[in-house]
Image 1 (spheres, rainbow, N blue to C red):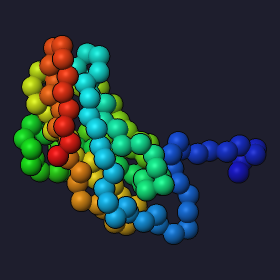
Image 2 (image 1 turned 180 degrees about the vertical axis):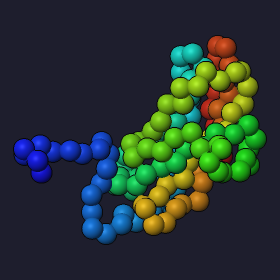
Image 3 (image 1 turned 180 degrees about the horizontal axis):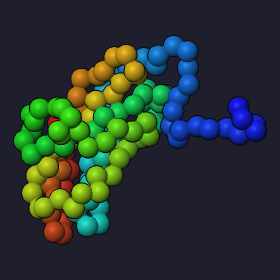
Image 4 (image 1 turned 135 degrees about the horizontal axis):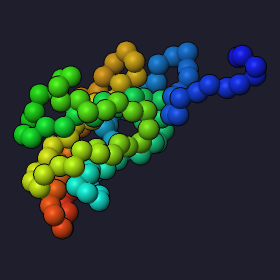
Length: 122
């Protein structure tokens, strides 16, 4: 490494062999935070460490996953959707990947309101 410095990306797992996808999808939660933003969380566990997660948002429960609905990719244990969403029901899907394989989508919906917030995983 140049000048003895370490360059790393937070959450990036370096391994010769790909990390296995979990047999059972992790539980995902979604909750509204200040300004109508939504925090989607699944946490870093032994089942998700080293995987990347693609986060998608749609307005219907079974929306299609694609480049137009993908809002982020992360290797951390969650993501905050910074879009100030209008009140109503919003749907998210998270797909985990080890670089070679992708999991089935895990879906969650959140009701964004001006005051009270409710959440429910699907």
